[in-house]
Image (cartoon, rainbow, N blue to C red; front, side, top):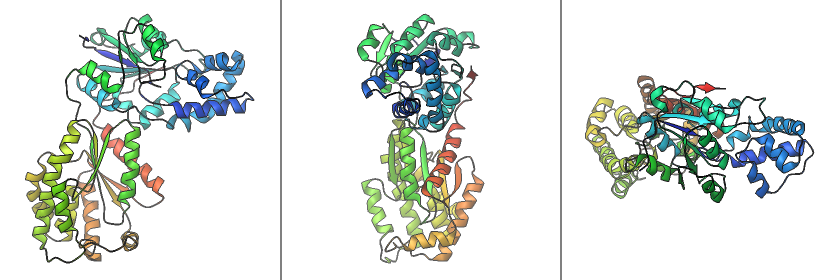
Length: 439
């Protein structure tokens, strides 16, 4: 039986994130810049985990002075660029959220300096989970893991020191945890040789973050995943931004489900075919609004809620706000009437974050006309879409904690950066304060 831990300390590279690509690229840059030949991937793999300067000396034959210069060259590339050639291991966000919700004190002890550690944790949405982060100083060429772990535990409430676990992916993490008096878990999904990891006698081991979740949380269900919807008038670039954002969420360690409204499941797709036919089928506005609500009810229960209950991130192309805007404001049925008919459909199934892409009406119209034959809603005319655009902006103003109005003008990457920042700021607002720096 695994004991209930009051504090868990995580290594960073190879445990929380797969940083291999950025590390390899930055090592190659440093070696080339300083006139050293680059070893093969088998040797480069040995750089993952131990202090960088020690690896330069061991595997490239550098003196300590040369290793210090090479380390500076490595940082020239790594901090602005290489550190983001990175991804959180799938399942890590659910694990961390579950532990925090149970009141477990979470910390990071890493050989990476704080000027790289903090941006990585912030960029990938992990910073808020941790109450302590211990890193070596920039001038330190050698990092003792046991010392870092003890520093991560400095200032811990006495109750949080009762049972401490160190989770790491190389033997040095396990040995450091043992010297610091902690139980240890070998993260076998990381960079260490599994045989060597098990020879270091960890308290237990886990094949992947899901296995660690089961070890630590037993049969508890993972916390509900985040629900993000994308809205905006037709032509605002939703499809492109949803695709880019899904990639970002997967880099942050989330398993994702991409869905759409109306549609997303067989019954709702049948309703979609009636709603978005390219012919005028004589449907009245009230029937249109009620059909959207019916499709939403089935979609939520059959697709969205089951995925959220597994801890997945659900990204929906449109949701309730589209009905409020298109049928409520655009069709003139009234946003409150539309909200009322959707209450039994959605119950408490509202998104955590809604991205509303805003765009100049003339530009949106230009984009719509390039998309081919319009459906019956896209044929609604300029006055309809002008009213819809104003209503979307009003929703963002009325509910700024959930809704983020994002300027959809500019390049795809510029818009994607705005979307990412807006979603992360709202998701992290729900997390406890974290990130106490320990240097």
